[in-house]
Picture 1 (cartoon, one colour):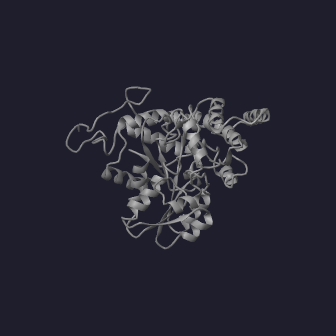
Picture 2 (cartoon, helix red, strand yellow):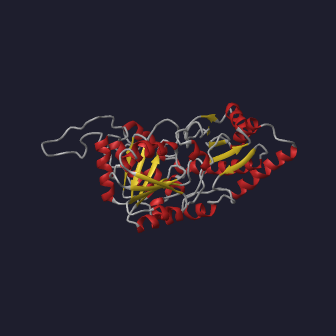
Picture 3 (cartoon, one colour):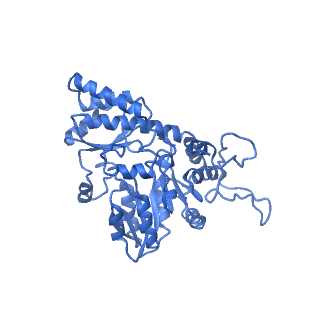
Length: 401
């Protein structure tokens, strides 16, 4: 089956015997046993629930993994994966990662005896690996600087040392990038974002390449208690059914906006992997089928950034990303506030950086909103240039599987 079909049907017909087209919500804490030593396969919702199992079957199918596990949040998913490791173990992690992941590693995992080294390139990953290294953890593209990790090279470096490769695939989703097919062992998602897609639930997903490793993740989830509730699992599965069409439309609009922003006099720098001069563009083209809908851009100064955040009307100033509504975020005070200032500035996350999650609104309305927030275009020549950008991108298209 093709990707969009798998998003709707998973690996095949639902095992539900009622014939329900939509997965029923089994809003129950516990299940009755037919007799001593007998079970329907469902005992207690913390360990397994039919609604959540349906989502997990679909996620394993779309990521092409052996098994998937749904969690109460993306952070619960990552925290549970970290419990695979023991005090004294070492992990190599992306230098530029989501602030919440940084906080988990620095404030919780380090306290529990795990050690971390930061690396960006394949060469840096290889150099950072030690005899104690048990895993390499990468985001790609990274949040918020859109740096691209070479998944194949990272997998080779990790496996040569007997370590696992864990990839955060939140930004591109399996619609555009499937890390397990490129050598990763574990994929993590904040399913709150594109997978659910409607800014109405919090969820996380772990997908594993190996069933034995999956059993360990499932046992840890049951023990730690971070399983996704049935109704939230239903919301994520419903969102998955439209993932392909949403991602393709959002990515097409992001391509237009990235080029428009780069041409605007108030914008100093644009970070979007679909731009041909992006440092990671060639790697992204090789390992992904699309560039997603996340853009970061830098304006002249802090005052301009604050003015944009105060002036947007259609685009909303809010944390999170990946929903049908476009959101703009200020990483320095929101998503990455807990990253130490010196590390944050070294990564380029300062008071002039804004992050844009492109939604499903008409791209012309998004341009108009940003244009108003950034200040009026300077003359008809700028308007002509904007129209030319629209025409060029619309003719080229921006497909995905």
